[in-house]
Amino acid sequence: MTVHFDSLGDVREFVGLATLQPYAVQVLDGDRTVNAKSFMEMFTINFTRPLQVEIAGADNEAAFARVAKKFLR
Image 1 (tube, rainbow, N blue to C red):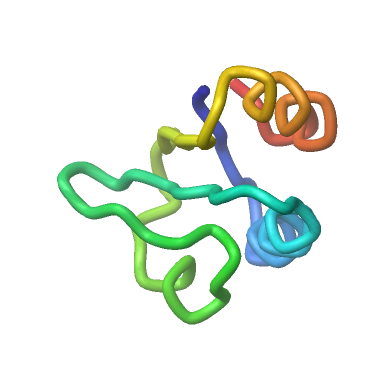
Image 2: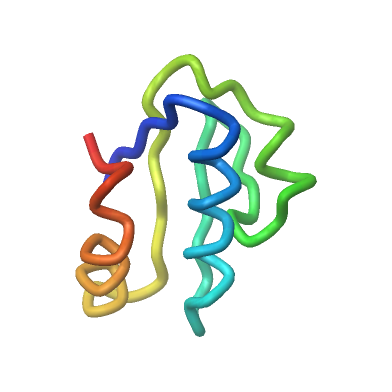
């Protein structure tokens, strides 16, 4: 799934949503992968372009897409 953030507030909100999930959520920025539950890691990637999100498990991916729909592109 692809996500896009318009502001640092969006990133903060996304991290909050990811943190509430009982499964791993990772964001890919080119060849780098960061933990979406970590503010520190999330603020080290480039937000000027859409980013790929990896969720462990197909059922979990659908569930996360519902809670993070604001950021999906």
